[in-house]
Amino acid sequence: MPKPIIAIVGRPNVGKSTIFNRIVGERVSIVEDIPGVTRDRIYSSGEWLNQNFNIIDTGGIEIGDAPFLAEIREQAEVAIDEADVIIFMVNGREGVTSADEEVAKILYRSDKPVVLAVNKVDNPEMRNDIFDFYALGFGEPIPVSGSHGLGLGDLLDAAIHHFPNREEEDYDESTIRFSLIGRPNVGKSSLVNAILGEERVIVSDIAGTTRDAIDTPYSKDGQDYVIIDTAGMRKKGKVYESTEKYSVLRALKAIERSDVVLVVINGEEGIIEQDKKIAGYAHEAGRAVVIVVNKWDAVEKDEKTMQEFERKIRNHFLFLDYAPVVFLSAKTKKRIHTLMPMINMAAENHNMRVQTNVLNDIIMDAVAMNPTPTDKGNRLKIFYASQVAVKPPTFVIFVNDPELLHFSYERFLENQIRAAFGFVGTPIRIIARPRS
Image 1 (tube, helix red, strand yellow):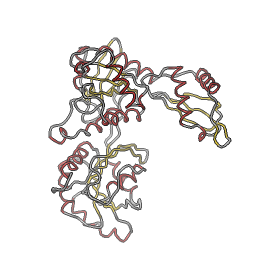
Image 2 (tube, helix red, strand yellow):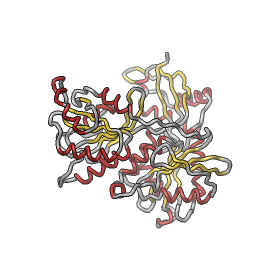
Image 3 (cartoon, one colour):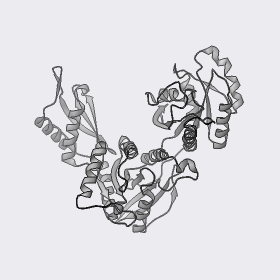
Image 4 (cartoon, helix red, strand yellow):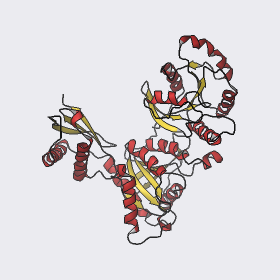
């Protein structure tokens, strides 16, 4: 089920990034006392009262000719359009400004729930000065202090009150849900059409839980699928046509609802940094991944081209070393038949369980082959292991001291598990716990 989305919006230099960092619990946004520092939308996740959500920090909206103002405003308007709830941030020390009023006009047109936060209210005496903000027309102002962390509970209480009620789709457990993510113009729409055009067994178009995704169920060889189509859904207007990073938020929503994620790359243009960022969201979410190199028909090639391109992918996507790579052309449908078997394999491995006794045999053999490390005279002892979850496969290893399980040795154990069971196409997670 997709997480609700909160966007923090306001004119420059009202403390949006400081509040954003407080909510997500880490210094993600750059905080500097200069207007316009946050030029792009910045995404992260948060939790409040067992409610998980995505949150967007935006550049300040301001009317004028200063550098980047047009781009900042476009980014902010995209975030407003995608959000379920908007936190409108103002500066309590400066009172209502004409720029605040301009932002308010934009928010009126959005027809979204708006929570008004008055930042920089650092002491109780300043609360008497916030009532002027009622004039903005968004109800009761909530006093907060980003620098001191005050009032954030009240602010988040108000925000989650407006979260939409979403119900998960009623799909059979055996149905494989997959989505296509990637930057614009990599051919996601063409690939969806190629898959469905070849099968010719579309059941129906059902509106998904997100405003902009369409779920397309279909079947092949007795297996039911749902394509969560985020391609070709760009809304009208220059904001979306000119903003490549718009694809990130859409990808986040699709990933959350998928079993398998197809990371689509333009074979003609090669790999760029944005491809890696988008793919990273699928990996972090623990979804199965297949890397799809599209437009392969347009690439001049010899017998080594495919091998060399895959080597580049492995070098750029080190965190996706488990993901299979498929080369195809949605336009000509060449090699399109190789895609569905990879999706099936990734989905099967994503949901694979292994027997505890077999798993422990593999772990003990690994320890015998490569003894556990020591730290300051203390040696890591592994007692036993157990698989505790699927999607992705998750293993708990019970040890004498979790701090002794270094990343390098954890990686060694992961490689041994993969060598024994495969798990092609899916991340696996290893958690160290002390034996009680």
